[in-house]
Structures are given as structure tokens and as C-alpha cells.
Amino acid sequence: MAPQRILITGCNRGIGLELVRQLLEQPNPPKQIFATCRNPDSPQNQKLNDLAAKYKNVAVIKLEATDAKSVQEAAEKVEKHLNGAGLNVLINNAGIMPDSSLESTDADDLLHVYTTNVVGPLLVAKAFLPLLKKAAKENVGKPLGSDKSALINVSTLLGSIERTPESFPFFPVVSYRCSKAALNMLTRCQSVDYKKDGIVCTALHPGWVQTDLGGPQAHLTVQQSVSGIVKVLTNLSEKHSGILVDWEGNTIPW
Image (cartoon, rainbow, N blue to C red; front, side, top):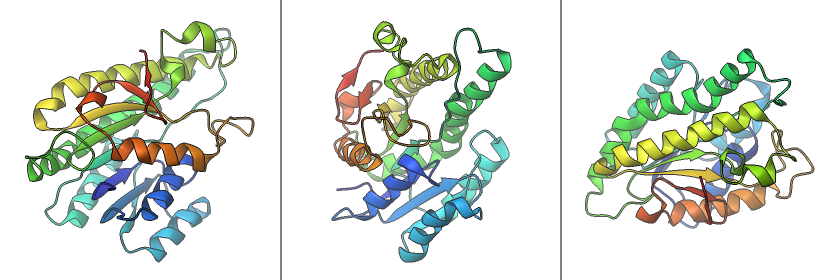
């Protein structure tokens, strides 16, 4: 069963948009899906807006993850939509991957990518934490999982320090790698601290996907990746707390 109430960042395209679409197609779809993006009125968000127009359980919410004010305003809007209920799942999906190498990366590049890929997820998690806690309390008798309360940070195999020797020659992207390694640490810290609140925290590698970020040569279609992600999501348990898993549920070493 899909989680009852879920929020996803970066839903205007790629994995975020497909997550919304596939969750709606589940036998028991979520009661509420909060699909966030930077600018809901932009023409590039037409597909997302079409879904929201077709399905009453989808609400498109403006959220710029790197802007604390925007994040807080989004949290307040979502709280009103929830009408007293908690938020079962938060998926920090938004992220960027500019070209970079050890030679080309500079301070501006690192700080820009770190702000989007690490600071953004941190701000979003903090703003929505009260709603995640509320969902956990509503389901106090249930084991850890997505039908109780879960925080998922979309990460990558490229953030694995142990796996770097085999992947770095093909994907140097230094600033992206460093930011995702930091996101993995953030996830681990959250898993330790939020466990007492009944929230499972997991980092998720969606695979190498044919998106604007992954490129057309990637191994997986968006549909294949998200199909796997949805299965991982619905099967989340305490064993997934504080680890990095891929779209098939396999554990990836830090």
C-alpha cells in the first residue's frame, strides 16, 4: 500500500514527476500527494499541473528548497491541506549535477552544488519535521516504515566513498560527488536522531536514469527507476534506517 500522505520535491520533470504519476496508479494511491517545484506557473510544469487538474488528491506547491522563507511558506500551506493530519513521507528529490572535475571545480561551483544538494534537503526536512512527527504519533503502534513516517533523501552511488575507485574514472563530477557524500552523512545523522520520533530515514540511489541529469545514454528509463523506487518505498522498514539503498533495494556501502 502506498503511504497515505506524501510530499516530493522537484516534481516538474524526471523522477519527481514520474513518482507522482506512478503513485497515482497504485491500487491504493495516497490520499494526498504534495508535488513541489520552484515555479508552478512555468510552462515547463504543464504535465504536473495537468495531473493536479485530473486528480483531486494532488496539490502542486511552490517550494524553492534553498530559500528558507519559501520552504517555510510551503510547510504552512501543506499543513493547511493536511487539516490536522500528519505527513507520512517526505522525499527530497530535487538536485543538480553540473559538469566538474578536479581541475575545473572551484569554490563557487562547490558552494552552489552543496547549497542545492545538501542545504536544501536539510531546510526541507527541518520545516516538515513536525508533520512527520505527527504522522508517527498517529501510527504509534506500527513498525517503522512509509505507512508510519519516513524521510527519504535521493542520493547516488557516486556519493559512496568506498565505491569511488570503480566509478570516478567514468563520472568525475567532483562537486556532485562531494555534495552527495555530505547528504549521505546528513541522512545517517537524521536516522540516529529521528528514530526516537518513529521516523525512518533512508538515502536512495535511483540508478543511472535517462533524465536531464542522467543523460540519454543512461541505463534506466525513468519509468523503470521509479517503478523500483515505489517498491522500495512501500517496503521500507527499520532495517533501511540510516543506510544507502538503490532502486532495487540493494544496500550500497558508504
